[in-house]
Image 1 (cartoon, one colour):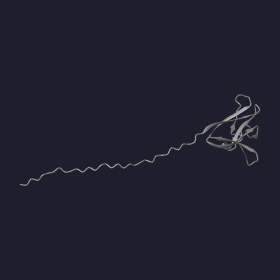
Image 2 (cartoon, helix red, strand yellow):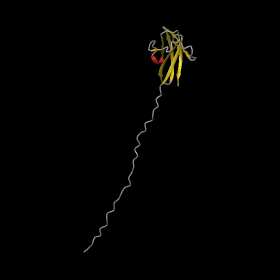
Image 3 (cartoon, one colour):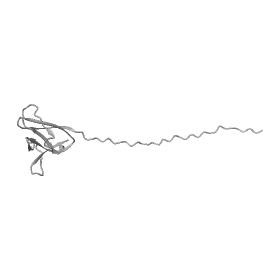
Image 4 (spheres, helix red, strand yellow):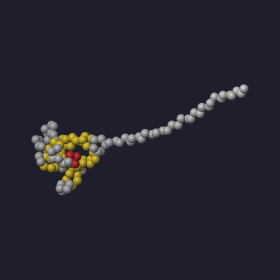
Length: 119
């Protein structure tokens, strides 16, 4: 009688292969933050004053300026992204460049537009 020796079967264990699937990392886009910009102009008490510019399609009545203290200083605040903007004041129907602004450009009508740069 022959006795067969039974050897335990060898288990071959493969080393785990890690396939690194890198998820694409979305680059954070830093949107430029809008800034609150206040415009002011001196006019006669009781005047109707508006702010018009490239930021509001040059509408002569979109942004009314207010004289909070009743002292003839009219102000308006708008939220603007960084960039360069042209603007004027409309005082009782008359378009006026900002007398306190040193930056200006000539427009297509031959008059001056004030320029505000937001950083």
